[in-house]
Amino acid sequence: LLIMTLLRLSLNVASTRLILSEANAGEVIKAFGSFVIGGNPVVGFIMFCILVVIQFIVITKGAERVSEVAARFTLDAMPGKQMSIDADLNAGLIDDKQARQRRENIQKQADFYGAMDGATKFVKGDAIAGIVILFINILGGFVIGVVQHDMEMTEALHTYTILTVGDGLVTQIPALLISTAAGIVVTRATSESHLGQELIGQILTRPQVLIIAAAVLVLMGLVGLPALPLFVMAGFLTVISLSYQRVLKHSVVQEAAKEKEQEIEEIKKPENVISLLQVDPMELEMGYALIPLVDANQGGDLLDRVVMIRRQCALELGLVVPPIRIRDNMQLRPNSYIIKIKGVKVAQGEIMIDHYLAMSPGIEDPSIQGINTKEPAFGLPAKWINSAMREKAELSGYTVVDPPSVVATHLTEVIKMHAHEILGRQDVQTLLDNVKQNYPAVVNELIPDMLSVGEVQKVLANLLRERVPIRDLVTILETLADYARITKDIDVLTEYVRQALGRHISKLFANEDNTLSVITLDPEIEQLIRDSLQTSDYGTFAALEPQQAQKLIQRISQQVEQAVQHGHQPIVLCAPVIRLYLRRLIERVIPNLTVLSYNELDPQIEVQSIGMVTL
Image (cartoon, rainbow, N blue to C red; front, side, top):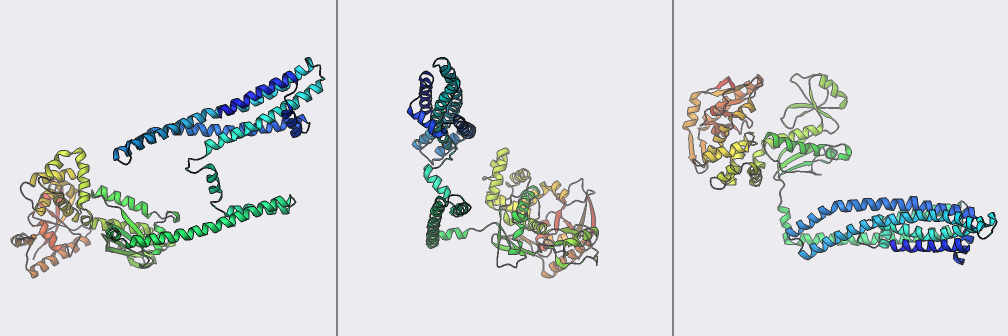
């Protein structure tokens, strides 16, 4: 570009010398000026101005801006590209030769855009020089013609204007081509194909556009414009479009057949079965009518709610919930959904997407009309009401929630209930690695000399089974390190950890007034359970007689019902020795019942007995 610009400017200087000194710039310039401007200097001057505006304002200005931005972005991206090459080299993805070649390519690219940034300045200056030379030739030629060559003023103006405008047109057309070439070079996106192939590929990406262009040409030919060339061009575009559409259809059929053959070959491979063995930790399958809940284009925000659920579980339980796969299942009823853990269904529900779920405050309002149902998370009686009834239900004291909230609440409760199943050894290892960054001593002391990762996982699972958060992992690990030398019994270690977390557990179940309403056991019952404890290869358990166990469960259930009726959260308080075994005895009947021991109570918590279990 620089050489061509300088060569063209040298021709400008030479032609200017001839025009001013001899009033003759050669037959080419004279003939070109006479032919283009038709002997009218005003027409030639206007055409020259138009070419200059196109070159200077449109092409050169745009190319200059593009080259500046490209050069700046390329230079800014160089450190990142260099680091990427170093990372690939360190990872063994490329060798030294390939790394050297990539660095050279990056340097060449930076040099190219930097050079183009400077070259566009030359092209811009060339356009400015053309304007200046034009006025110099006209004014200088007019003065020289009148003073030195004794021409009349009109003759001098006519002669030198024709020569100058002709010279300007002869030189500005190549300058316009140079500017256009520079603009194409700097605006072309990086591609491996040649410019011609790229242009053809972009034009033929949608052959229907050529049909539209052909139709427009035909309409132009029908309204009075020259019909023959327009019809010929329209026919040419139509033939190209139809031919390429036929080629595209053939290639699509071939590609589909090829993909089908590849799928068949993949299925035939024996190692392909391995991918079928993958089981997702958690799944949410939905009927087709519930798809709008997860479609952002239809206003669904369930995916965002799932992200918030995982965040909430991390804050409340200290559990990193694995990604939850959401998919549609055409075998389900349209408005139903199921929740799976490790491929097994653990919960299900049914919602009405265009209704709201209204849960009664305890006193039914006959004026609230709806479809009777049960809230899926807690099994509470509820109604599906339409949007017109929503405000009235809220004024009547009903709790009204939308369908996404129903699914999100159900999913949250399922995660909390099955958190001990979700937590695996790999998850525990991730938690340990996180703790090790700030507290390496406790992790190194405990693992692997005292306990394995699997044993720590069992302790954490026991805590999560009773909804005790494991977020304070440092305290848990330090307690295990203290008592792992004494015993390796997972249940005993769990009890020690619970006692260490006593303050947190007490706060977790305490009332707003810092009191704890509990159901106590008759000392005779505690002694009965203590005497029935037996140890086998499967661990320690309470071996009560069936009649005694059934009667004990009934009495506890009665006290729990009374506590719920009085608005208390049912909590059973017992001796530390029997806490775990009492919990296991009644968890099949009352799975969410909280059982605490005396050693887990915070001294600052006031304990109030609201009942006693007796036989």
